[in-house]
Amino acid sequence: MHITVKCYATLQRFQPKDGEECSLPGGGTVRDVVLRLGIAPEDVAVIFINGLHAPLDRALADGDRLGLFPAVGGG
Image (cartoon, rainbow, N blue to C red; front, side):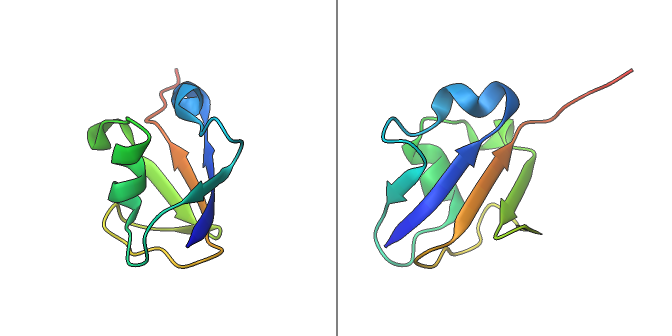
């Protein structure tokens, strides 16, 4: 299956080299993508699939749009 991945802020350095497109076997989860990109799961604080908040173990479907955000702080 093919999904679109967008890494934000400090995770941007892990953005797939082929742009935003990513392929993975059917039944893959957000965790599978995170590990495949070389990101430590604990470094991902906010996950969106198709614009909706999702957990790390959510299964992905063909055509999904995945957004990965680190923890951010402000003052």
